[in-house]
Picture 1: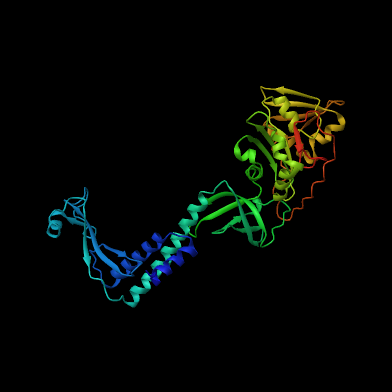
Picture 2: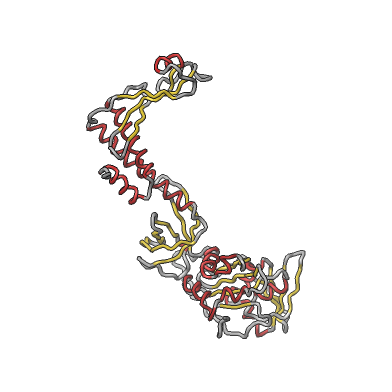
Length: 400
């Protein structure tokens, strides 16, 4: 059986707009009903059209619901949509309350110019609405996922990313500092939110969200995807450094080795996808002293004193480890505070001087217009920490 030209046109529209055939057929029916009311309808008619895309034919009905009398609080029935039971029985003898009475109307040979124009406008508007609804539903279900997109354009400080069926917005605050976005470049982004607006779905994506790190590792590390290795916490300063704490949920599994991969291939892939951002991988522990000590890696920790009441810790390090423990601009200890969830004071073993770094500080805060931020210098190399619970992205000999 040969496919009709109308059905072929409908299928083409569906393929282009990514909307179902039923939505297009429903749109045509609404347009035909609007056109009929314009030229041939009466005020008290409730016009419904049934369109057959195979033959291109249509049937027109005046549809009313059977009622016994006016609804409570109303003086009379809605004659456009309702019909009294007594009148309904003249059309159908066994009519009952709540039943629909469909009176078929003659189909006109052709519609007038104004009616045809009205139908065209209805079709265009309804198809646009259907497309927006499909896009909204598709991407609303993908909130919290990492998607691969293409940089469509850059306008001022805002980047627009083509995700396939829609274009997402990545504002300046969601961009990695000093990362260049070239038109046509492929980039992985985290879908933050999808909201409806009068102009269609508004899709917000990010390159700075901490969860993008978790999902990139899940894509590269089968143990994380399978649930045998879990990322317990993430502390990130986008574009500079990230610390993640991992734990194995099954015995005989090395959580750090799983994330690093053979010759560091797994972690290096994530680093590349984040534009070269440094990543420290730390083994999570319920022992606060052990965990805080590992979180401050690559610095060597001599002593950790826990104050449960104030949820704080005093960490003693050798003088030559003091700057390494604090990090450039306080970054290392600041990330450790975020990762462990404890307030940390660093104390030099010789002087006893307390170095207090507030967790609220953020070395990678969004700069103001015109503000210049210098690139952070590479931290000095050090020996591995006493406890082998940490791996970084730049080991001399990555773990297998």
